[in-house]
Length: 151
Image (cartoon, rainbow, N blue to C red):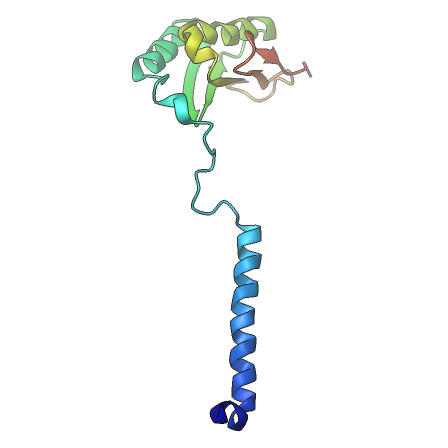
């Protein structure tokens, strides 16, 4: 007790520093509440049992590339979102491109389609066509792709 009376300024600084550390910890916890936890929470629990295999990907890319209007196919899986980018030839119409996009659903079984969201992006090699790019989305609870409004 004698030391505290003799070192009042030092004691105040130590108490304020300790309070400041607790306040900063509370503030950082408020702003960064999910640090250390998975980004998707438990929404990805069943992707190990219902997975997209490399065979699915190969069948998709090779099957779409067989179409004369398709020049390139890119595939990406992020969590439960399947992103497919299809580059079509320059003389492909919007109607034909959407048919190709709808064809992507044939390469996944019903269980995969009901657990994954599918995003299809249709682009052309040249960017001068104002009706492209076209994007379509299929939510896991829906059965078909909804296409963006034609521009």
